[in-house]
Image (cartoon, rainbow, N blue to C red; front, top):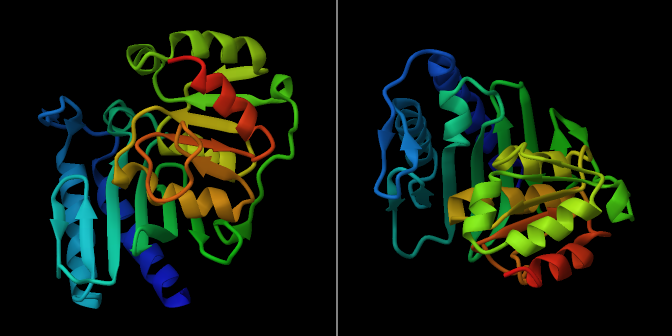
Length: 255
């Protein structure tokens, strides 16, 4: 595992240099078929990581947000990449974006990196090991009351469009603080012990794979909205663990 951790951190550092070269500068922004934005930084950072993986582990697969799936069909391991999670923040010069790197064995992520290039923080989560930020172990907050908790979301309009209006109203009345420090940054904050709850109603494999080892290794829980923990869900609720069932109940009653 240490070999893979070292290599994943190398991917994070190399991609960060490329991304930061573009950060804060004027960029041409294109729209993908789903209308999400993409820039040269997204594409080039993923291409760089793919090249490095192919050189080091030619027998591994790679799944990336920008270039899809490649590599041997019978590969035992698969890297999952999201070069810039939070592209909207990135193109606006907001530093709350990250690079997500995960290593899968079968259907489960065994290693996850959340790198926040503009903030200089890198989180590493790996099976059987404590989660770290810049090499220092981190743990979730031990908050046990919802009225003492902080919750993050990415976009309240998205919650409303997905039918979470009633649940959203109930939750925001119950929590101490609700903020939109979203995308991977919100899940990073849960694992780092800075907030207690983060919810994303729609997730792709490259959005969630790296998050799971990080949250679990910090003592938290990450499931989909129905409470399913296996595999990579199409939604993601990260919590400190103590508040998880209460949040699932609130979310389940809202759509």
